[in-house]
Image 1 (cartoon, rainbow, N blue to C red):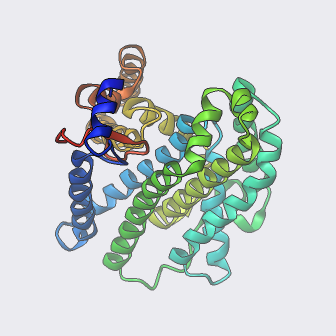
Image 2: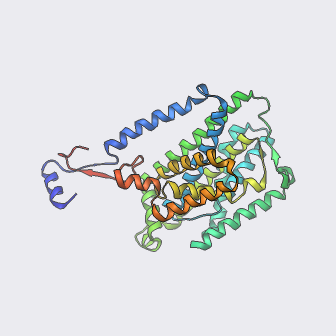
Image 3: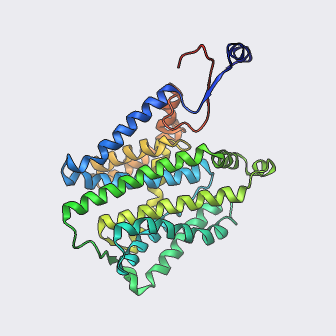
Length: 343
């Protein structure tokens, strides 16, 4: 809006400022209807469909947490698999103590947030590339510690107890619903977090940490809070992986492959957009389904797609959509228009 437009709008009653345009509100209704349909899916399709969708929901949650951490907070971590593993083993340990595994999933998120507090004090002493490598090393340390605990199965892993008495169909439906709830909660959590003052603080810290501190932003508090939220989300995802697979192996659950998946999905979908992990996870999930049988060519195609997007679409697929249409499904800024202009 130009200065003359603003003056004209003020004379006509002032400009209209809102969080979302009409297109965003309509897309919100469509997404709400889609979420309701997904919730009813166990009653509509075979369990083989919902079982595979659990993997998609976990990927959405993990990518959303990494996007919140790196895309909005500027904290590029290659060690979020630490909290995936801690969350998975928390469910195993609590189940051994008699806690119902599905109830242990939110407790796994809380446990990871607790672990993230002392971890952040160590990791935040590093900057840039050193922070990325440092988080990877921290994840390996946690893996080595878990391997040495015999009650958790040591290096061979351990099976999950507490679900043997459930009907298989019911267990599949419950696992699907908790995975769906996790994906929706991570997306909604990112949206609500970024709409507040913390969102503005995070983006200021991401763009220029020194200037943000000079402007009065508590840089340490903002970074630590987003790190704890990301750790909790990844921990809950690890818990869902455990109740879905019914077992856990330290080498697999603490694998850097999880961070590679998160980074790939966010780069493909669009880093710094809440919509990015959704689009990227759908693309990655589709490629997994169609290319998994091609062996090493599967990895070659994934790498080629990632390189192509990084070179020619630095904003990712959603960045391209946003630049062409101006559409924002999760608006975290403000939309300004004149009273005489229809949306």
